[in-house]
Amino acid sequence: MARAKSRKALLTVLGVLGAIPVASGLTGILGGPARAPGGAPAAPSVDSEYRFVNTFWTAAGLALWWSLRHPEKRAATTRVVLGTAAIGGVPRLISARRVGAPHPVFRAAIVLELVVVPLVMVWHAVVVRGEGQAPKKLRTPATTRSTSASVNDGKSGSDSSCS
Image (cartoon, rainbow, N blue to C red; front, side, top):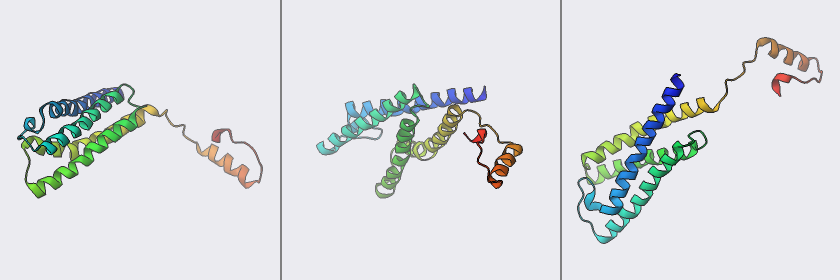
């Protein structure tokens, strides 16, 4: 029961995390750098690049949403999207050091990318691993002894617990 609640909560969090790049990406594509928090009109090359990059940002959110339909089968997609977002916090830190602190929205994004997203990745791994595995069959000491006894005796027999 707790596992099902954790899975449902994780999928909700992933859905919300997917909404962030979809919403902000579409805003970036349609509005350009001037629509970004703290933004302003930019040189044509910067505007072009900004809108182009936001296409990938939007696609990342859509891929995350797509992975929610079959989270165990599409776990790799979820890991790639979340991992890329987490790594994306590093260039934000570089920018903050070299150019100055960004708008508070982007400072929050740094925390989200470098702290929250890695925690969600761990949570995702635990939930997916728990859902995808059947309970492991424990080997009893008697099984272990009988297997090693037949090996020590030089007998070739089959151990049904190893097949």
